[in-house]
Amino acid sequence: MPIFNNAKLAVASTAIFFFLALLLSIGVAVFSFYSVRDFEQRAVWVQHTHSVLNVLEEAHSTLRDTVSSARGYALSGNDEYRGNFEAGVRQLNSLMHELRNLMRDNPEQMQRLAATEDRITQRLMMARGLLDMNQTTAQARLLEGKALSDDIRAGFAEMKGTENALLATRSHETATSADVTILTVLGGSLLSIALLVMVYSKLRREMRRRQEAQQRAQAYSDDIEDLYNNAPCGYHSVDETDKKIIKINDTELKWLGYTREQVVGRLSHTDLLTPESAERYTRELLPQFLLRREINGIDLNYRRADGTIFTALVNATAIANQETGKLVSRTVMYDISDRKRAEDEIEALNADLKRQALHLHSVNKELESFSYSVSHDLRAPLRAISGYAMILEEDYADAIDEKGREQLQVIRRNVKKMDELINDLLKLAKSTTGELTLERFSMEELVGQVIAGLQQENPGVRFEVPLMDGVVANRGLITQVWENLLSNAVKFSSKSEHPLVRVTMQVSDEEIIYGVHDNGVGFDMRYAHKLFGTFQRLHRQEEYAGTGIGLALVQRIVIRHTGRVWAESKPKEGASFYFSLPRKGLVPTLIEPQ
View (cartoon, rainbow, N blue to C red):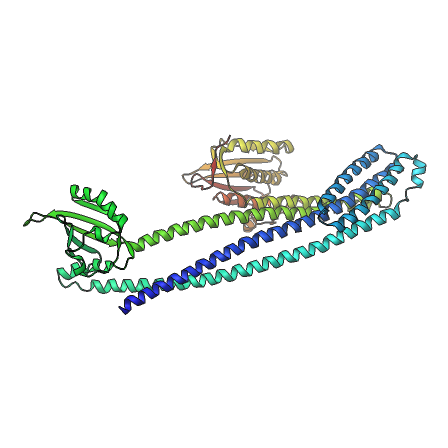
């Protein structure tokens, strides 16, 4: 009796701990959901402030360009400057309209914007006056409007200062919200883990206790009766004439929680079953059993004396008693409750895996959005640098010597290079995010399209392409793989006397291996480990242009397709790049081409 009470207490405490862990997990999930919603809203306002600052900067820059165009016309009389002036006025009107929409939530900023807009209108009217004057008069009045331009500049500076203050406040609030969320989720998760560890420890102790009990029961095997009574499975015999149990072993009695006196001659097999299993046994299984006199591998739910339920695997046979002629069934049953629990746990784990997959998909979407935001923020100062360099070239052409103009050209070339680098980084980010949708397409046709584009710019390069089978993959990503590998082969073989690029394909049971071979400068295999790293280069920038991201992008795309990438080369003997795609086993969604 004390052992029974201790077992009930252990089960109850385990259930309480598990219930607390479940409630805590639900609470953490709900809090995380609302915290993420709040974080997203704050992030929207931070992005809104960034947009206002960008449009303010662009509007101010456009005004300066427009006024400069009017001055250029007054100085040169070139009608191109007049056209640039009119285009600038239209663009400036559009930007001011956009600013009004962006700032309508801030009345103070709207007042500053209105005052600045009035000054802009006056300044444009003065600039337009230069277009209508003769050249001599216009040149004499070029310096007019400086005070008004200074007022406009001050107005833009004040509005930007206000927005920068808002940006700092909103960014701080967003960071604080994120920190609170992280700490809460982390603390709740750690507490949930601690509770689950306690539950697991209790379950392990209970399992050990049951295993030890079974081992002790198997020790009593002195004779046939002891072996029957203490077998690790349940046995009982039923007189099919009156359906009463006439014999039952101790193991089955132990499972059921009855004494032998309570069962033998008093209860039937169906009396031990749950109502649902009893109905199924009477309606479906018993007629088959009486007909074939055998049933095997049937799952039935039994009800213990205390009302709890366990599942057993039942095998039964029926034979006629030689003396009485009565039909007697012998039933063997195995408690498979643990297996059922394991199956339920596996189902729960599968459901958790699906939830994790959905979470990862959401994180990838956020990463893609973040990549685009970063690229936008990086491009804004690049446009400003390029624009100011152009203004210096145009407005101060007479004051800058040849060396200065060369330096400005260097600035603009480097801005262009930075823009290309940002584009490559975006491609690299996109290659690992988003859903990998697959389709069946012709690899030969795709390679032919890439080569056709390269031959227009490199007519001296000869290409050799074999017949190629179709493939199942993401067409857009595989196109980037071929573009990078083939353009690299063209670039590094361009200094050869007869540049040649060959494409090969090998097919095995498991994968398709594609190769791109050139007769260019090659590389030392000691440095092959650097090839597929981001920003890693084996040749100087002055010799061969590039950002150092192409091969890293190739590797990421191929790995997403569960393939592999490698290279072989010798200095001055060309290089060979290989990548493989599996012939089967890809899991992502397959779509047929339209």
